[in-house]
Length: 513
Ligand code: ATP
Image 1 (cartoon, rainbow, N blue to C red):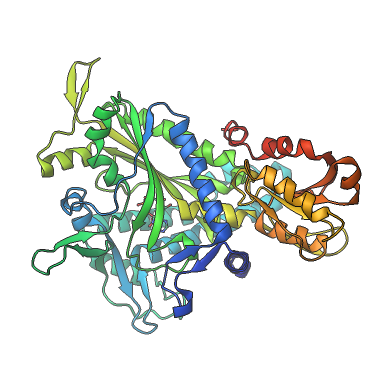
Image 2 (cartoon, rainbow, N blue to C red; image 1 turned 60 degrees about the vertical axis):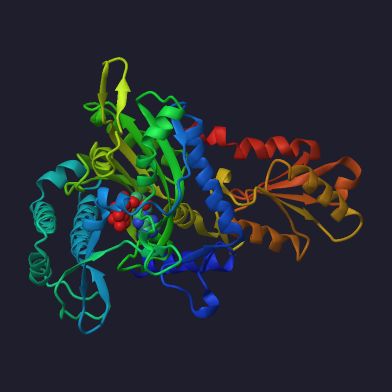
């Protein structure tokens, strides 16, 4: 645990020190769970967004984009169920005065049981050596089965109590399990209360004529209310999708995990409209497609897993998360939800407008079913960033900090470094930069010894350093240094564009899907 905490602290401080993520309004001591992206962070974030957009919109002729406003008519949130049901159960500790999500306290308790199972597996693997059969062990070992059963029954009871709004039982469960405040160990809890996560605001100048609004808690509803507009103007045929990226706002009860859980964040969502009855197939299809997208970035297959939901939201008939191994353990990165016709049917009811599709093959009108893929851009940023940050022991006994970002996402693709600040080398370096900057984001650096400059570029994830030296003056060659291997090759200046393109080309990365 201490190790995980240390690793996470390193991630947060590296993000700040190297200009990726700052706390919002830091000079006023910051605003809790709100962050700003700095010079390198904004590039990484933009590249992740583009990587998603290309895979979803550009590569699918039946998916189109949308950029709906953040403000929406307030009835939207009545229809979507957010006014009545977008709540989290909160509980306060009377001694520590800390506030928690009651369901998260219970889920963390169950996660500890999962850790115990992992430990049993590790122990048994050591004991049995090569003859160890993990699947058999997991399905037969009495201790493991005991932990599993306990965890499942806790989650089942919690799901039932939450669904029935039986908050007293959620509190009873916390007491029975003897769950204590993680900070102080106190078990002196308040009652559990529901808390609506939407931020309210007002539109209009005068107090009487103003109208209550919400900042959108998800981008999806902007897609649903535009379903007919897009379908008709784009002459879209089912199945088709509408994709959107943009800010969403949630007044999260507990927000202590850096950019993992923010109060203002960005989502990348795609709603895929299908014929009723085909939603299960599309749901499976999108689960696999989204996992492949993640795997294409090469962060390691073992760092992802699906978590199929037992407890379904009011609008869903199937749901799964793609979980990623963050520095604080496996947590939700993306959700894939089969949302049935809940949203469109509800907007029909509240607006009185038809939101239907005429299917020429069936010769009938229907409200389409929807399969949604929804990923947090900031969470994806944290996944990529934390996974890429590594400390390496080098052969010469020193260590280096290197951000092994997938080259396609790196904020800067190449840094051009004159070996010394004289003899015409800076001029050549600038010329190379002026030429390459039409195609790639590149950086120029002439300060300090070249070794230190390499380390600075390693720390921000730049895949290539290009060094101009005295030999360049005579034969138009430079050294190109690779971030990951630190290998250095001598190449012609005219070859640089091709070498960089090969490594950062979106097509090459997406083809791995
Ligand atoms: P969680 O259970 O972590 O609160 P959720 O199930 O409420 O998440 P969804 O409503 O399914 O999340 O939102 C889709 C995606 O949006 C999530 O998978 C996550 O990546 C992202 N997301 C949700 N809430 C936040 C937040 N507060 N900060 C950053 N990203 C978020």
